[in-house]
View (cartoon, rainbow, N blue to C red):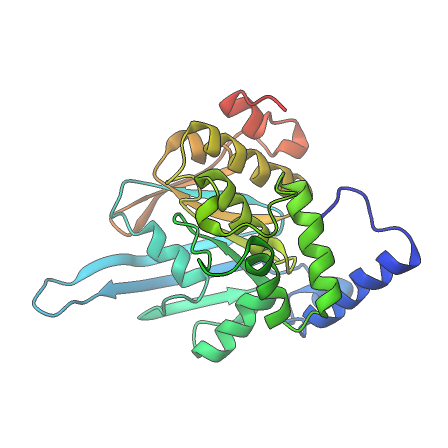
Length: 286
């Protein structure tokens, strides 16, 4: 994902094939709506989402209680709160990893809360990238195979998947580690591989679940710097974290307590409007 637009017939053709392989019909409020002059829908819209965890012999846990949420294209939104507040459950509902008990969920104008697992799996392959706290890499696959696999599953030609993987790993500082196994990498390197895997299909939405929660300070700085870099290029990010400093890297912070939104506030404008962003929060040096 270079900062420069692809140049040359071969490279332009590759990116066109990737886009064609990942193309899905636009919802009425999405790209087609914008082309027709209508106001585009939020990328994410949730209305009165409810999720209760019920275990045998234990009291119900009301993880998400009537939550309304919107995320506009290009936003970097952080959901913060203490452990057990329900913020990861909210993220999993947005990504289709769990199903709401009630309420509505729309992605790019299309209602998706009633989707079954097969439709959600297809949607995640093509439109949603997810980064987890504990990396979730396939331990018996190389770095290269971990990153390429989502593209191949989405139907991207093998040559284009390899080229996209190589470009991402180079940008993320992982050149030369393609044949390494996950267990041979540091935590920060594993999380960068997980980020490459989440971005290889150019998702409209990147979900990050405590992306720095298992990292030391150096790894945290690396991952947040990279998230900020991709956001500056237009990547929409919804991140959950219990760490206020990590949350401050976003443009907007939602405070989440006891399954509900307690506060929702912008952080002084986006980086495109002059915010210092991640570099200002953590005083990172390139």
